[in-house]
Image (cartoon, rainbow, N blue to C red; front, side):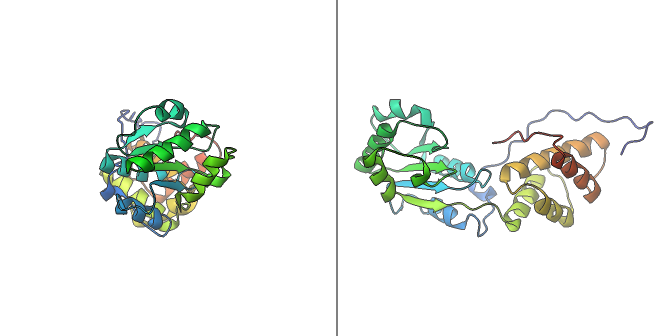
Length: 233
């Protein structure tokens, strides 16, 4: 740590948005099935696909890749009512459905419209469709017919790959044993990986030091003690 005569460097608040292209995607057993489905588009087994998995598993990254490829229009779950009244002119993405009540009739009509127009609908959720608490029988029937692909919690290989890629994007060299340590110690979440890389990069700039195992341990311990909130959902 800097001594009393060594001034701290205050790092500039530069934005480092994680790259979300297909080439930036780390693929392991945790997400291989979901990646395969995205790569197969438009040769999908059904008009509607649900990517279901825990927070931080990378669903939104996969959705962003598909949205770019397909030029899909994005909808929030609370926009379903208005969207159901508009003609479906191309692929649609609904990211983060199933966490709060939504217009069930609107989703039913939207799935029908997607099927009739020969296009596709991608939905992401932390829950499987039959756990959304849907009460409309017609929608329950439709959801049973969609293809649901599970995105698993990140494994060590995925987290190590993501962390290494994030550091490389910042042109920061970090020893492999530090990357492995971080993958074992942090919350099993892509969002947490993004967060910890940002914190370590800033700490290293402030202290004018390399990112070492000691620095990584100090930052991770601070997070474990609740000294920093996760800025990603």
